[in-house]
Amino acid sequence: MPSETVENCSSHDPLLDIDSSDSSSGVKSDEYLELQFRVFRLTFLLTIFSVGIAGFFWGIQAGASLFIGALSGIFYFRLLARGIGRLGTSSKIVGKVQLLVPVLLVLVSSRFPQLDLIPALLGFLLYKPALIIQFLSMP
Amino acid sequence: MDSITTAASVVAAGLAVGLGAIGPGIGQGSAAQGAVEGIARQPEAEGKIRGTLLLSFAFMESLTIYGLVVALVLLFANPFAG
Image 1 (cartoon, rainbow over the protein chains, first blue to last red):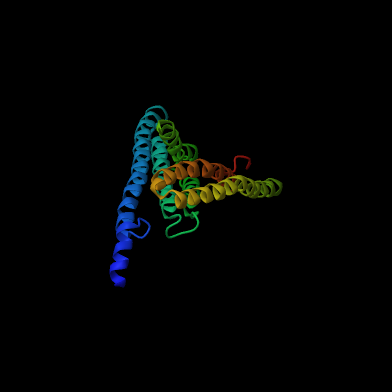
Image 2: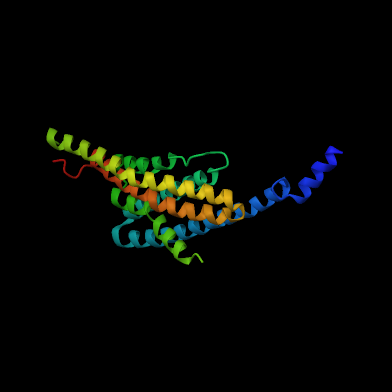
């Protein structure tokens, strides 16, 4: 019978076995999510450390600017990770929406006198040391 | 800000974004191509490939961001404005 033939094929051929490929894809995306969370955690720790130092040495305004920049850096990295997660499945290209985040950060910090531009930019780039640490700690 | 400084700032902003985006654009295209090919060949390594692609994209795109920030500073917070 044709239905039995299809059942046999799906149970033996891994390419046709939709259930097993879905579950293994879940494991892979778990690995990808775990990497993202490690980078987020490292960035957050670096943010707390550097905001404390900036607030202590250069005042609360520099600390607040650094904090807002770091939050926007985390948001940028989240958007980038989401774009790469969609690559090959629901999208053929990686979107450029995340580049709007530094644009908005510079515009906001140049418009509002409560924010300093240089600490905000340095805070935005705090995701890079986290990435370097993560890259060096990869097996 | 006099007109020469304004004109030079606008031209420099355009050059900073335009020239700064060429290299990362080419690199990101080839990296994405390699990653998609690698995922198609080895679907079991998808998580690792995507993770490496994420790290390399973040490093490459930061070069674009540097050019973007220089251009935005020249346009909106120009240090040469008198």
